[in-house]
Length: 470
Image (cartoon, rainbow, N blue to C red):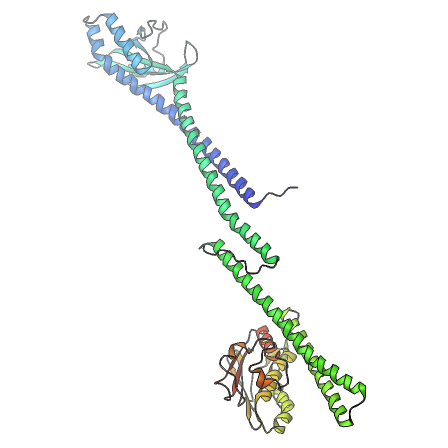
């Protein structure tokens, strides 16, 4: 089954509604017009009868006094009949027709006809009835009086087809107007459908070009309506996709580089050991380096898997009831040996009473183990690290402060980027692959939390703050 294009459906729908709507309005209006035109015509017959009666009054008075010949009166009546396009009949007060504009007065008595009976009572009405000559006619009659006495009745009549002609004329006028309005409305619907579907066609073409690899394509977003909002949203999405692809390419390149380095070390050390030409001390050193690089690769792969699970929505929020003090003391015990070995003072500053945290214990350990590990890595021997925990309403505020090497202002905006290391020349000897803070930020965001890192500058330490909803 063939599917119509959206523009065609718009036009057909709009045109159909317009035609049906105008057709209904035309029928309703036409009926009103027909009825009104007929009533107007009939009322005009009453008015014409009254006007003709007044016009003939003087002649009828002269005729009744013998001062006017009947031929003259007949000529005057015929002239009025021509001007009003009607048949005029003069009737006496007994109902007898005694003069007619056609020259042949009706032979039957007219007294019982409604308009004649009303005229005898000094009223003017109209009546519609069959015409003896055929068809239907409209009749109206008006009295000609003198001193309160009826001298004569002036009856006028005309075929109903004259009224129908007026109705037809109004129908034609109405029809022409409806046709014109319908044409204008359909043209407007064509323009409207084009204005609605043209941006969609542009959207389709741009999306196809982007799918073909041309990610620089954008839609014009100069309209101030929903179409403009759609174009702006599409352009924003395109920019996000472009940025994500750039980030993915950089991520893949960095991951490959981070994996290549330990693999190269492992391969070179294993080849040297296999050749059997190393002394015992060097061989043990090479084996230790292989173990370290293998562990580093394992950590990298584990972090990558965790990031993938978090960003793919496969790792939901945990619902464990966690004692923050127990978690903090556990991590402090874990890192205390490293701190003591380097004469670093590791301090926990937390009240005895803290709200129970609802989360995944493994997620929280990932966050604060990474933050404490980073603080130890970048704090020189003899420094200080403080972990402060405070309850602030429905949020737990964690602050980890160190007296380490600090972060340059230009590096602060990029510390959460994957594989990013500030001042690689100074940090290349420090263990790690640059995924820790990215992983921490992703976990905190999973719980609608927030993390911020600040530093006065190089050599002035670093402060990491985490706001974690209870």
